[in-house]
Image (cartoon, rainbow, N blue to C red; front, top):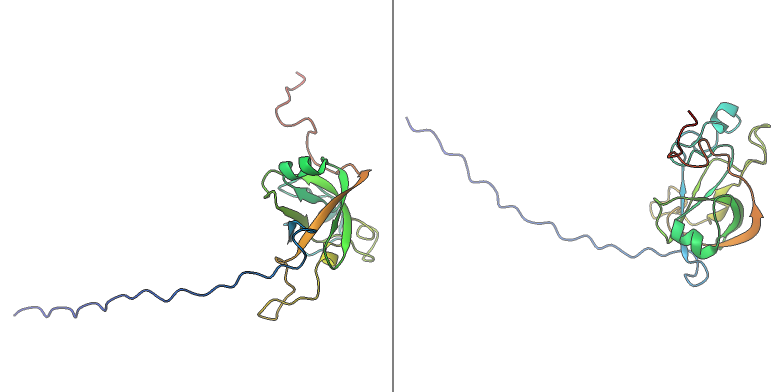
Length: 183
């Protein structure tokens, strides 16, 4: 008895391409040349644990900065602005501004400024109050298309050095990891 043959497979058709609109950025490119990237740090999260000193004192796994807000800039951007680690800059959007020290970070794009969330509380106890800056002040009341959250990725900012310097609370060897041991 002959085995029945399988029916032929249906012919695959490629789906139609999806039309994607260019994002509408908030802020004039000529006055605000940098993209703002706010992110939730691994340990401090959204800041609801900022009253816990063990969370504040735990260094960020990528930058090793603790206890404060910092502004991550690419080395090329930092050089163009004339700033280095610990130099305080004002980051301004069309909605507000904050001041924080610079952390020069080679893993960020030269046209982008990254700032961790979770600091800048006006209350929440002695370990959280008046520590760092609230980077959410840079966001406006613009809601994403789904209507569920503020638009975090379409804000443009300017960065201006203030002339102040605030040492970063960085965990590690300030001379770098390649220093010869003293023994």
